Image 1 (tube, helix red, strand yellow):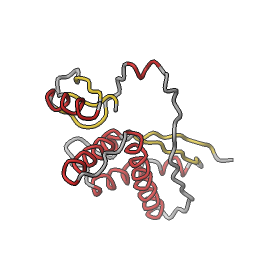
Image 2 (tube, helix red, strand yellow):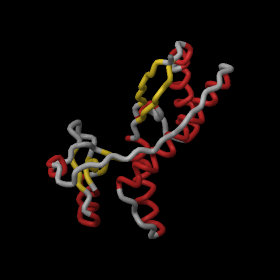
Image 3 (tube, one colour):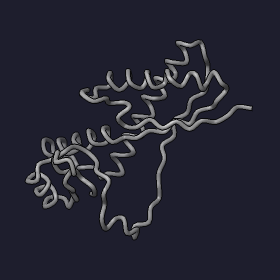
Length: 167
């Protein structure tokens, strides 16, 4: 009977420090990460791969903001940006895992699943959001965005700027 391993790739596993985050960067990094999993597959493990999306959802949020400013396209809410990143990251990991398996003369079925988490809108954590997402902004830009669309920002403790912590 096969064993099961749950493997978590952080969002930064696909975009390394100093990289722009091109699709070529992310595909190469996903391929390298998937190569490390061959040892588990050879030991008869089935895999569940989860992933973070911090850098990717930040880029999606920037693209949304630019589309809104330049073309008047509607800005998408955070949950839609997260779903978008889940789909594209899942696709990249699935594609690169297939490539790694082919390079190792292995054949496995692969499935990508988009998930949704239900949270209580009355959860007290929403009163003081702390998880930063997206790029860093100046205090002035953060204040402007708060006035325009109600986004919530917090100052980075290391002094790198202001990041969204709520939408």
